[in-house]
Length: 152
Image: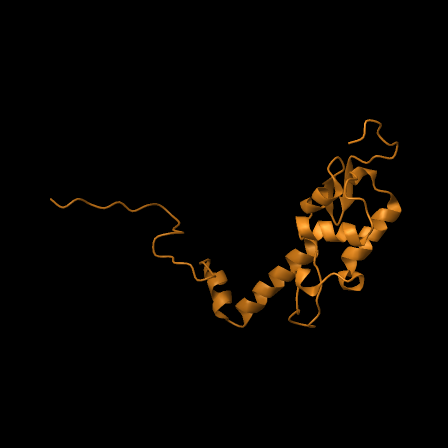
């Protein structure tokens, strides 16, 4: 952080329904938003022409607008499709990057669809079991432990 603080420094920014710490560097401050990783935050800042060494609270309103524009449609700014978290969407086949509430909503809708069509994955979610093929005989047990009685 600079020794002389700017007069328009914001200690907390409100971006995509999330409070972002203004004292952190912009690439790491963005990772507090759900749907943003370090790599995606880095490429978004690069495409929006924002200095990586700037603190999040030092950003000007026009820089924030550029940042939001890149996140809203990253394919326009030549972000590769494999970088996005929603590839080949089930309903419309589009490639997009979802952030915060939209991401939660889409994941919930996907799980509801899997449960509705009674898919194997959907049923495992419904039953509260492991979904990705893990062994469940000994690990992942819930409830009280049952002791072994000694033979007399």
